[in-house]
Length: 200
Image (cartoon, rainbow, N blue to C red):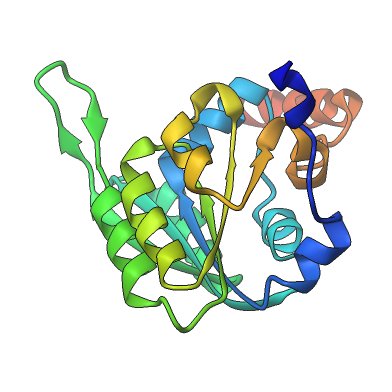
């Protein structure tokens, strides 16, 4: 009985995009990383920005992530992000008793959502974290539209329930993934060259 409501929308996709106005994007980097792992893809962040904006006027795209200051590859990635349209909000990773490292940026995302309300018309939250539902709901009561983009299996119902529009990453993965690397033949030749070069 209720299955009929799943894809039932009052507005067409074109009408939704027309009403978006100024868009602000809030990306939970850790959440997106694990979603990409689940999907078996590597995110192309230029394509992601293009796909999320969908021709709307972008106010700002925030990328929230925990950082390991000793990880040069990560530092290089974050530098690239800063130079290619993202405002990076980074927080040092904290080691947990079980040995894993984590940085929780829910508060930072919630604060920025609230602080910028009035500057944007649509907030696009790229996260499935239910802890953001209260802030998202508060922002919607102040006149902003809320779009949530995440992997359905990793998304809290409470966050989907406060959204005006929900997009499953699984449905847009072809639009946002990196193109496959160079062919295996090229990789094999380059590896052979390196091995021979390093021989004594």
